[in-house]
Image 1 (tube, rainbow, N blue to C red):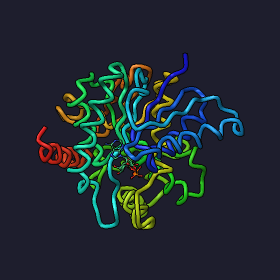
Image 2 (image 1 turned 90 degrees about the vertical axis):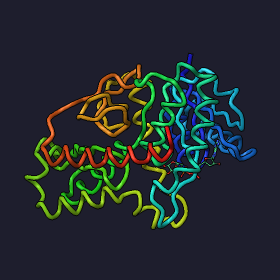
Image 3 (image 1 turned 135 degrees about the horizontal axis):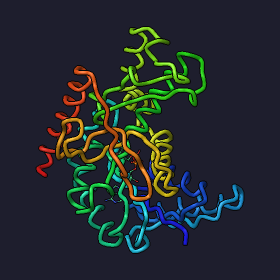
Image 4 (image 1 turned 90 degrees about the horizontal axis):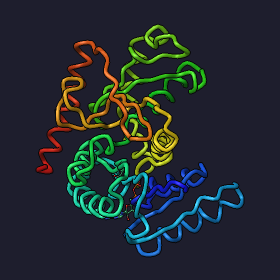
Length: 308
Ligand code: APR
């Protein structure tokens, strides 16, 4: 039987993700949105690209949840996106209501699903989905680190004139201004990054990475990034559905790892068929640890605002 991936929110991130998953040809796709007829229209359009591109994925659009039953993976992208001048945190009140309602509907029909949250403010929304869903911590996670790392890798590759494939990069922490891009643990073809770029250039790239989302928001004028975000979610879905055991930074529930407890924060995790198979831990320098703690404190504050 084919796997089933449901994407809630058929906006920019959700519809692009639906397209990317359909093109992988290993799962059927359900697109859910509150706008009448819109997910149905987008789903039909993606379905009709199948004969041209050679995939057989079934793609269904709906305004309800019956079609989502027994999904293997559900991705939540529903919510409002940032406008210029807004931080991810400004979205919290509206998106709290949306993520709560969506999570309830999903889990009722797919109690064995793995839930990937994309809605911002990311780490707080994953925490909310975890708390509402009652799912085990291995099956609730958030997409942020893959995207932040992708941005970091793009800028490093550009600065050095090398292939993005040669660049391994590392980002820890919450998905926000306090994220911690770690040049010390990043490398190009195995060579540590600090040996290849000056401290000034590295600081500039780290800063651009942390502001990567805002840079796109300011250029687009309406809406926020979606090509790289949807590609990043696809990599997580690949790792889970194909049981690849890939290690990538994700927002996961920490219970003492990195000295943080009871909070979703971005750290390296091994993703496989069961979801989060393992949280990868390693020694941080004192200043890196402090930066991660500051990032976690910001997430904690937002979680407090939601009252969960
Ligand atoms: N149920 C289902 N869909 C909903 C609901 C709901 N309760 N509320 C809103 N939506 C839908 C909207 O109708 C819209 O089509 O969610 C979609 C969101 O799409 P966009 O506005 O295009 O936003 P997008 O760019 O896809 O970003 C979605 O991901 O990256 C984050 O910050 C971003 O939180 C935002 C989310």
